[in-house]
Image 1 (cartoon, rainbow, N blue to C red):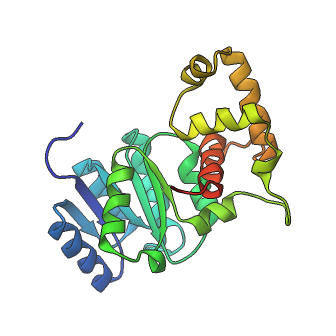
Image 2 (cartoon, rainbow, N blue to C red):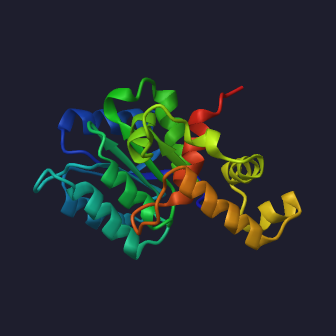
Length: 223
């Protein structure tokens, strides 16, 4: 665990936005290890500075497609567990799926025009840096393939809902089994059923456990 300010690498090709982010984050107590404007510079900065979090615009030079994401994922291959927070103007589910796929660290995906306060942004940064997952609801909606007019969570049995609730608390299968006084095999069976009812088909690209929890959190009223 790092001591002191959270160290960040910021990647954004628009000068004013990049400088604005740097000033905001410094004012809120973060340390900026590097601020870069291209994918090659991002990869180099991440490997050199090994920050607590990478804040990454998906569409960076040289091609302005998914270069930022590719550079961040390439860095995470060499720095397992590197937390990555994507910033984008667009809802692009395939990129979120790739980010979630390796289950190797904190992940986030925010839409630039839906960050409404610096407090909100800072909270997301700290959550992802600590290993958490934060997805804009519009991204989650695209990730969760739903049938019109149906509510997937309503299909769950009472036991399956209990299992999903405990998943949402971050509990492992072993901890869930202990809490519900059932076997781990039973928890695994319930999990498989949950994924099927939420239409989360097996895939190398999807972290189905995370997506199931996100579906639960979206559908559950906050108190």
